Length: 203
Length: 201
Image (cartoon, rainbow over all chains, first blue to last red; front, side, top):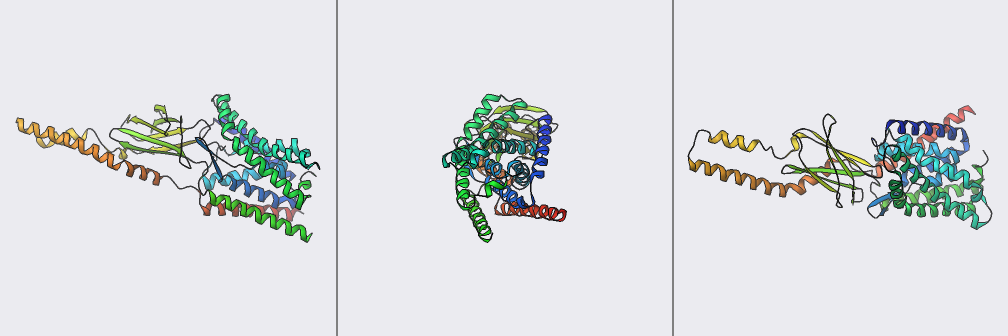
């Protein structure tokens, strides 16, 4: 999912960076004092998740956990993912500095979109609705991220459909895994600490 | 309030444990792309794979000279391999691009080319210059042949060593230090942000 350095053209990198800065600014505004630890924990989770990789046919894909970050952080997923990506670039050499902005956009925007679309469903008291919405939030974030990565590559001149199919297909197992991770987290938190899901919706 | 905090710490502990279990299960670099190159005779061989030793099929290999001019390109086969004849006797930059937007590059120094093909003749003519008998000619021919055979055998023997060397030259993937360090950084940033915010309030 990380786009390496020197693959994309300047305009794509720049617009990605600009949009990421905008998203991060909105995210930072929305973070309350009490929410800082939550952002940090999900950022750490995102940072470590990329080490968990699943072999799929000829390629290997790794967990992203952007859906989880989106669901618990909303717009604040932008700063969380930006910090995670920066450290991944520095310490793991995934992605790169010039592609940091576009990578952040590709992972954080789908997370935020899924949060906005599915937050009502996740909070639903009906277990079935809440479960489906949680699963969709995890899986949908990965799906949208894959499409956005393909689109970034398309803007640089690759064939969109072929690449999109390839990326979505290789990430298919990750969609299921992350869907279930989010589902599990939501069910668990609804049992032990229901209000944790409510805090983020207040602002 | 106390119970809430307790539950939160328990959840945090479970989360950390979860991360570490996963991390240990696959202590490797999730998505790093590797490109190795070595010479054999007058050809350069390259091998490309993702971490976890997954070969990169249909990856695009481009070869540039030191001035950034593209000399040749090609696709990797199903073993992630691609080979080409050394195009110029200069430093080469070999670049790999995959369909999914990953890339890697390998710098090939001129000094790494194992054989300098002009060298043979110079050495031969240097020693035997002026001795024009048939026997000496035959000796030179035999010596040349032996030299070539020897070089071939040496290349074959050295191939695994060269491959290993190329791998060693690549930096290692993230270890426990990087992971703990990264989490430490995040906690540090959290502390700084919390401090700034607390001063504001």
